[in-house]
Image (cartoon, rainbow, N blue to C red; front, side, top):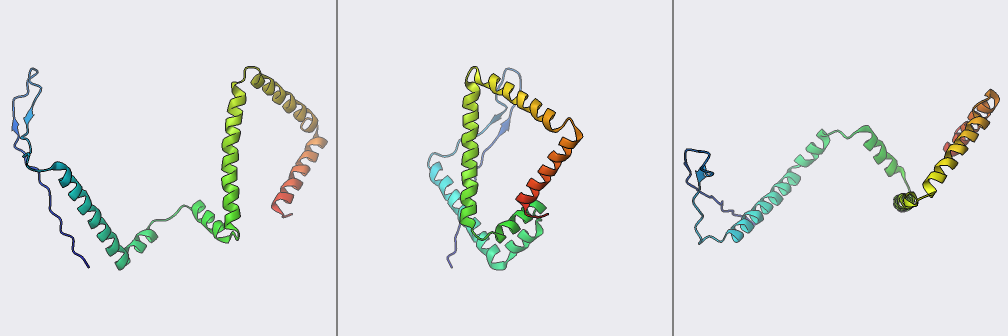
Length: 167
């Protein structure tokens, strides 16, 4: 096991406080560092030493097992646990990952397509009128009278049961 020695960098300065007046912008005077010290190599040495000390701490934590106690003390939200359980139950993780990536790409490209259509001068207004007309027709055909409403609710329930697979 190698021992890492670190030298500490100390910067000393003498400060003389002056009477801070409106005409004097300086309230403190600091002495400069000696030019014989290369500042870049000292910073590099300090960063390197602190990095190796951190690695040493991590190794000690892993060797003593304290890291597991820290992980157990923090509780994960319930939905994260359910997602982890669902992911563990998946048999073909490659296919599911591919579907997720494809869905993100499709969502991103459809957003770009919609924003491109929105920039055209006449098409957004026409599409809005078509949407309003279809919504009015759908409401009149399926929501105004009670038998049609009940039939629509029954169709929705059947579709949900087909998708979920339960009755």
